[in-house]
Image 1 (tube, one colour):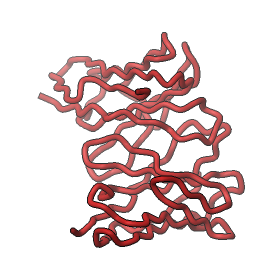
Image 2 (tube, chains in turn cyan, brown):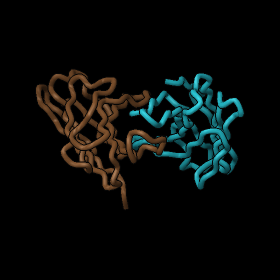
Image 3 (cartoon, chains in turn yellow, cyan):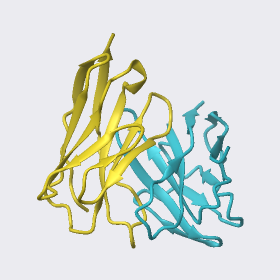
Length: 111
Length: 114
């Protein structure tokens, strides 16, 4: 399994953009990069995923480095509801049976 | 709305007792998973099932058992052999086990020892 490195914690002011980085230097060429977030006492929630190209959805954007060794989750305008632990997870898809969750990045949003 | 329902939200176990955690999904997903989360830690896989009547052990299956008699249901039993069962238990499902599609999670069951 590819290993990931994320900052333990980050802070952002409300209404400002947030860039959450993730290093996954051992990712294989077929691994998708998934991002999930988890609010306190809740199950993880899918945010976004991508393979090579940058991706956008209603929740966030995902910027993937050209060499695929890192990616950045972008929240365009942080709200208090975005305060959560964010997990970056390489997922090989075919033949994979689990997602390997590390400790993630705890995002605090300051009003 | 489609989703995953876990019950109960809170559960207490006495010494030597088996307890069963319920997980039901109406997403028509083939694959289902059970994870355990300890405070401040990531998720660890207990068991998973890719089709009805079939399931496989994950990384920490000792002291747990599962069944998959129906596509919609994947109950987890925490047996008395599990000596440290206090944790947050999460059930998830996925379209099938061979795609890169996201996993959908329930809201979890928090298990404590009396």
